[in-house]
Length: 285
Image (cartoon, rainbow, N blue to C red; front, top):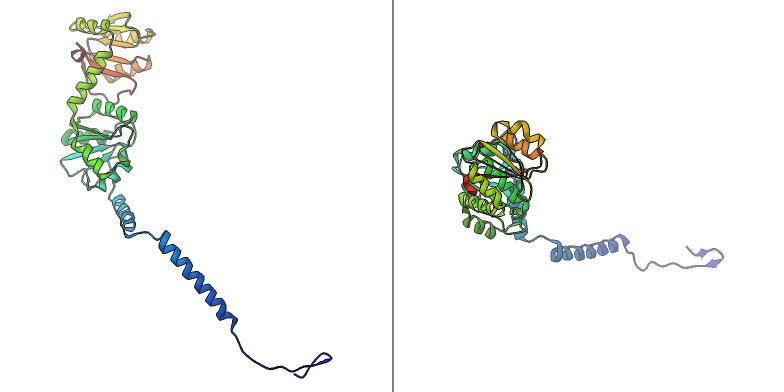
């Protein structure tokens, strides 16, 4: 080439560069920077990796039992003891501690599978330290044979406890009969004096007495008329009667807004209303 347009020109080749190689170097340097930042800030530690893998493995150990398909640890059916908790998350947390005999209720209604398991095994109820846990414990003790009770610290749930806290709670479990006695004493102290005195006098009379919230007597009928006449009694807060507390009586009492039912003895009931307190005459007299 000796001319470019009207001008004379002379061209000489001094150097050949591959611009693609320069771009590769820029990309490589940036990749090194990104990798360094990831290693320092985002890369999981060996402990975190082990923890994540462990959680996946523990979750895979949760089985489903009974027609209700309740979540349970792998040793619930075969072992001689079980721990009743509220749900699946609690079971997974216990599995991390090596506890494989936990079963979840999954709700406030006690499943029949739980009731059946309690008949032949040593049972510990391990529940949250809140009002929900108290309500579940109350119903559980009405329908199932519980041996021990353990509670999470106040305001805490079993699923959020550390392994150390879990083992401490289980070591400090108390016999169920002590819990029942404590509940009974608390209710006895809360009952109006008139109701406690009437309960003592009713023994052997086959009579039922209704009281309002302040302990004022509203009506007295025979136990045989209870199912028929309870629907006509309004404003009752307490029902005290010389008879057996059955599921039918509980359902009728709940329907009328009665909060406390005191009877001569308690039969096996399928479901105890959570807003109705139950006691026997012997427990308050």
